[in-house]
Structures are given as structure tokens and as C-alpha cells.
Image 1 (spheres, one colour):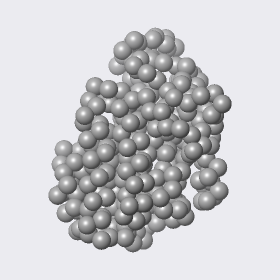
Image 2 (cartoon, one colour):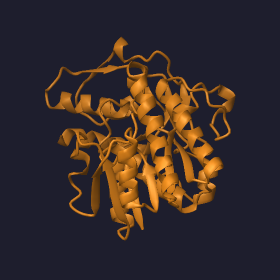
Image 3 (cartoon, one colour):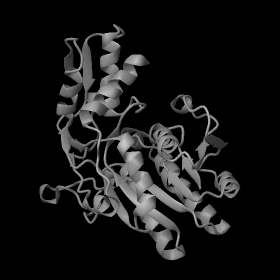
Image 4 (cartoon, helix red, strand yellow):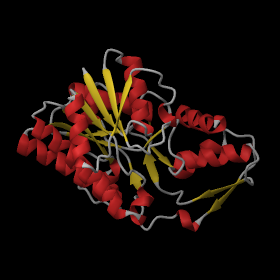
Length: 317
């Protein structure tokens, strides 16, 4: 079996490679990377990964790679995934996420391949969620609150349309927040952990700068999430959409308190207005019943372990 991973040098993509190497060593793994992509997330992978240069925004390069690899399964993980950046660069976000996916579908369609594709959507698609809609089911209305979220809704609907119109074998997933080692430092859990690690090493004053601490998120370890992605192509129905999450909420303040409990340093918490978003989703809590029922999956790694591993990752760097 040949597997192609877009965004293989990224946070989730690199963990997907690790999972396949450990749990499915028989799989032939290929990855797409841009020529300027940083590769530190996959430097530990000595063998078993074939890299192909490709920008998903370029239709011809996407088609060339897919024609060369002819994958049995494709995990589409490449994206502009930082929500705040989507306000400052909305055009880049929409182009990368929507048009990039369109190029993949068109390549598979015109080549006549039977590739099974997983589309990595996001809980941000739900956006404005009301109190009586918690926990969130897949049938909940989509009310996106950022350009990023809009791009993910478009990816989601494009996947549905290509399945209905052309029979593309695609499974849509809406993953809630996933964290762990290698998480980019712009994301809240990783940013807090990096600030603490810098304070411990004396690189900055003992002050941690924060944005909105009131919002609540459903956190899952990335190593559980990539296992879920594999299972979705093993067992889930083509064209369907599935929530992937732990089913437990943590307030951002609770998460910060957990990080601070793992250091001996006395650290001041200081609000930073520049870290506030124009609009913020207040609560995201998954109902993962549909996915768990069809696959038997459940989150296994405690969030405390996830945070401890992430903090250690920054201490080592």
C-alpha cells in the first residue's frame, strides 16, 4: 500500500509518519513538501519516507506528484492552520486551503485513481456554538468566525461535492484541538510551554503573556489524532463527516495552570491585548459518538501527559 501525506514536514504530518512507521511498517510512505519547508520535524526519520517537492497551490506540480506516486491513500494535512494569521492574510489562507485541495481532487479525478482521501477539517468550522448545542454533533450548524474557519468549511463542502458529483472516495474529519511535541510556537499550548521553558533558562523575565483565558477547548493528543485519521480510512463511510475529539473541555486558564504546576519558577501572568482575536469561539466540545461507534477509537493519552511532553520538547530545544 502506498500512502501520500501532504504537509508531511508539519506538526500532524510528521506524527503521521511516526505512527505509520511504528504501527504499519509495511506501508510505503510518501510526503509532499515545499522547497522552502523547514524539515526539523522529520529529521529523526532516517528511512522509510520518500519526499517530493510540491506546492499544493500549483496544479501541475500536484498532478505530477500524484501521477508519480499513484497513492492508495492520501492524508491531506497541508494547510495554513493558524487562526490569527487568517485575519492578516485571508487571501493566502483561502487560496492555500481551498484551491490546494481542489488541485488534489482534480488530479485524482483526471488520472482516474481510486485513492481513498482523508480531509483534515477543523472544529473551528462550528464557530458560534450556543449553550444548548454542547457537546457538538456533526449535524450542528456551521457558523465560522474566522477566515481560517471559512476555508475549512469550504474544504469540507468541496469534499462532499466531489464525492457526490464524481464519486471521489473521501472521508471528512473535523478534529478538535490537538496538541503535543512539535506543535508550532504560535499555538496557545505550545506558546505557553515555550515561554515557561525560556523563563526556566533565564532567557526572559518571569512573566508569561496571555490572551483570552476564558475560552474552552476540547484537547486531544496528536498521537491519538493520527491514529484516528488512519482508522477513518480503514473503517469510515465514504462521503461522511466525523468529529474527532476527547469529549472533555479545558478552559485555557486551566491549561495554563497545569503548565505552571510543572515548573518550580514563580511566574507572573500578564494579559497582552495584542493576543486578543477580533472574534473568538467561546467553547468547542466534541460529541465523538459517531466516530467511536464506527471505529472503536477513543482518546488514550491523558492531557497532562500531552502537556508534560510538550513542555519537555521546548526545554530540550
